[in-house]
Length: 104
Image 1 (cartoon, rainbow, N blue to C red):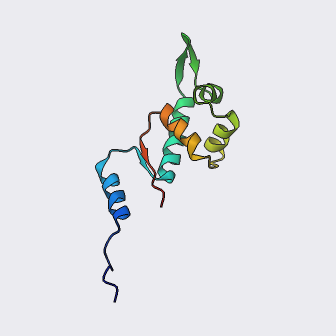
Image 2 (image 1 turned 180 degrees about the vertical axis):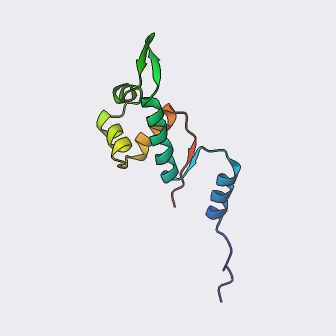
Image 3 (image 1 turned 45 degrees about the horizontal axis):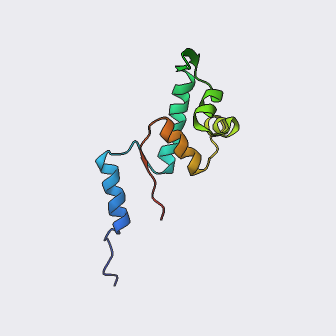
């Protein structure tokens, strides 16, 4: 008989604590991807001031601001293809998204 049946691991407890605290905008890669795609959509439909000029948000401006290639951003946003965590981190920093991803 397993004496640990029904006992949560410390990782499960930590994950539950993170989710319940509301400290993060996204928990896990899936939530992070959804949130970043939503922020990209908002950015593309907004106006931004660049060097004193009002410009419509675009993939090119986002590319310049984050250092991520236009193609990667477009495929991530429109084709819903995954990108590496490094590029997601750059987007998260640009959009001021706080996230938690745990590697098991």
